Length: 174
Image 1 (cartoon, one colour):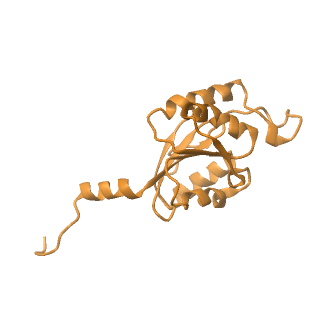
Image 2: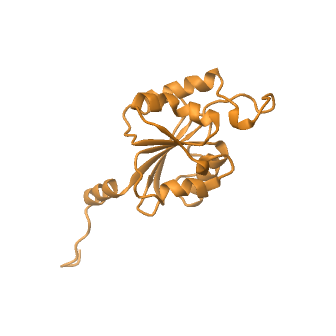
């Protein structure tokens, strides 16, 4: 070691990360009815019995995780997915067009870039989660094949002050 040059200790760097990174929980809606058989507007397509069970099980999944707020796509299946969690935490579900089908990573990025948000659940659709996973792989945050985007699954993202994901962890569907 060169005299007079200090090297940051790993413990200090880890503590700094913990202080500066914010968490987001990206939840793909639970199992919903078949869109081919659904008569009516797709926005109103509800969760199936299995999807409702997945939604109930999210309460246990999040039991040890801090949650400050819950946002959802306005599609019924996304709202139904986080209703039990919202009820358990006594939180309002805030609806956002930025999480709707077809909004892409730009919509998700609006939340990640908002420095006022931390420990936030975002209930959204498979197309957005698929794009997220592709982006995480492209930026080498995760390796190809780590995690997925199945219905009812969750991605835990830790983002920096600019909304850039530094770490990601996949939680399979309950």
